[in-house]
Image (tube, protein in one colour):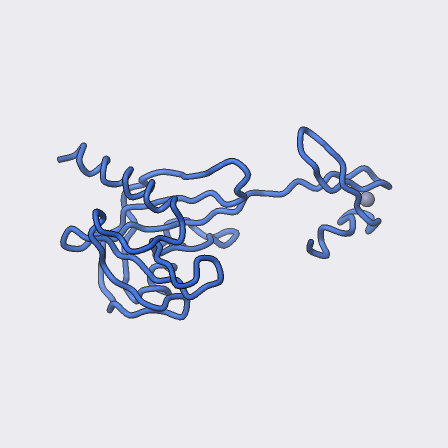
Length: 166
Ligand SMILES: [Zn+2]
């Protein structure tokens, strides 16, 4: 629990937890303010090259040592496409241009929703950034061990959208 979850932002009274609108939420016993948690937005890019897709081997806590599509959190106020390009550049050294929106992925109980773009390489040099142990391109029929099963669904949807266009 963060400090901001312990005290009311309006009157600084200690918050209590109560069920409000179907969920347990922090509530102020003094001024009745209810704290609603916003979802977080992440963005990932599918960057194809020669029939394969760009993946990173994660150097961060969640899924350390396992592989995932490049991406990360969108900063508050940041243009989503710019966040997508920034994350790919930070993690892989490649410059990309996000193009087609593949979809918005969310699951019940998970605070993070994930925006997925198909992106084209525009430059840069492939090199693992500080949040990656390795970077590389993989055949989607022969992926390395994934940190998040979601990436498989994302790639399946991406492949289907490519097949539709022929
Ligand atoms: Zn209060």
